[in-house]
Length: 122
Image (cartoon, rainbow, N blue to C red; front, side, top):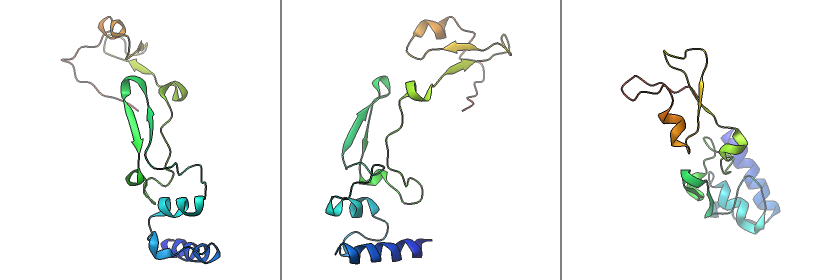
């Protein structure tokens, strides 16, 4: 597959008069940004998005990887993903308690005990 990709990049570089040695075979982010080719899944370098209490994420060229992270996009916010933290303990094995990370009382009033073994299921 890598050979096919390299051949495709060579053909495209011939069509667009791009020197294929200037980007390298695994540097598709730089290649796509040459000649202002706009691919929505390859954001421009040094874009930053902040996620409230989780902090900010800066996407750079190093964030992209052809195999492990081929779509160089920001994670969706927790509100879009609908992230929920539901606590099940020996005291409530079938009826989970909804915990809100930003509301300390939901954790303090729950059956959570820091001295018990804790497992996270994602």
